[in-house]
Image (cartoon, rainbow, N blue to C red):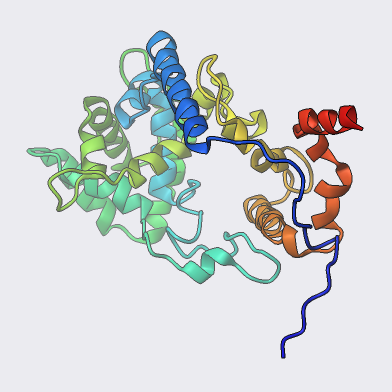
Length: 319
């Protein structure tokens, strides 16, 4: 024999025994869909959408050749942001973010291995045809010991800090061996557009993996400057902004808000902290019907009376 469960106002809803009104849900949905469709198509035709040209290695090296070279030498000597990023690109110790004692990045491991010196500099340069002097410079660089390569890299990085581009790359002379030729040829390769192709080439018919060129570009200052001009940086609520004067993804306000306040904005584990916070809030939202007190807020706030104000007004008038 089953025992009926007692009624609890905090959990259950009493059966409605009042008046009912005919409501055509299908008609309402159809009208709403047609209205939204007309508005969306109309606004798209009138205002279009922001069509900023993508930043490529070619556009970057053309607009800011010195910044490109200064970034390229950090890829070669392993001091760039990508080279020291850690998982999933490399196994740099202490680079990953942690959620408590757990490093989520280390759990995933290095599954997109990138050697910035080889993948961003040496291997692309080796694809240039008929570059005898360059091939010799690369062979000399590759054949030197680690200490010698580090010395050349350090000397060129110091010289590149004073580089100029008065129509051509001008770098103060120094003891950087074959690195100077490698950097100047890499710049020429980037300005021709060939470097974009080299970093996206794959065994497939179309190159659709832009991971390497994006990481290379992100290591430089140029993209950060462009993003700042468009108010797209993290400190500018960039996640919910759009280029130009167009409205962006307003529904991301809660996610990007955490990046603006401590400890999220000051922690080296900021991304993981934000992710963890959002997961907790999402879980709380999903469990609202099961949390005593919290599930009663809509009933106690009586917002439903505002939504159904016409019905409650008619009840009051009938008394």
